[in-house]
Length: 441
Image (cartoon, rainbow, N blue to C red):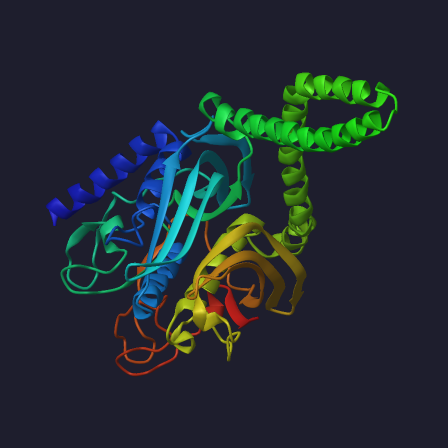
């Protein structure tokens, strides 16, 4: 008994010491996440730096990919002016959580294969944006010691995420933050010194050469016409004028080349900006969620809701049996869902409806996504979703951990991943504790 008390006191002291050290660097979390995420699909690497929703979604996605006999690989190759990553001083908060934005440049590469046959290849200069969630007070409890109430074994809390290793007891606990809750990938138009030649100077040279070639063709045609006129006794002024234009074009080709390359880059930027307009409009709806939900509890930050919702939606879509998931009450999924093998968030969630009636909160909206299908097709797709939650069930601000026992047979199981008790079949209603999806379209 004395040894157990010592362990608990050591845990409290360690927690106080870590709290005094301050919040862990989001740049460090970024490095860990990109390293893990770049290997998670093509190896057994686990996403320890991602939250539970993202980890569960990736687990289901890997099963889907394997079942279809496919091989998917992500790679984040350092490049650009900000390859080490940068975190931003603006931090979004609610009563309980803090969201840190982090971005960094790289070359993003995604490969989808079936055996030795390449099905899809995407490679682009990218800016990777991460949403890193943390508890507002920055408290760290993962290394604190918790005594299993069933067998009495002391273990660090972070080792109990998948249950007590001694007796198998499962626990209901808050996420051990900080963790990455969401990411999105956008094209990066910035250039460092090593990229100026291949991305700007070389295209300028090609544009200049193209202008010269086209000019020579036009001049040869004009000269032929001028010579024909001269042989018939006409004036040579036309030929002289053509030669003057030729000299001007040759001398101005570099200028035309750089102007052409610049206009090409600018045109592509404008084109992508126009495509992104709906995303910007969707971002304006964020305040709707916060304004409606703020009076009903601490978790009113849109970023926290969006990140968890995306993880749940991916899990449902990639799951073999969505009806067995405790956070899904819907029926049929969209017809194309069974062929999706990758879903990338495009950075916007449009809140179409946020209402509270009595004890029930309802959210309807669309997730702006890029979807990769098993046949290699890659396209933008908005995923519609409706979620509900009992707003009378409020959570405390401090970290919470407790044994989960089935209210029917008292057995312990993972209630986040199983709607029905595997021992007695009793249904667990997650709506009392968390957001539940009613449909996906």
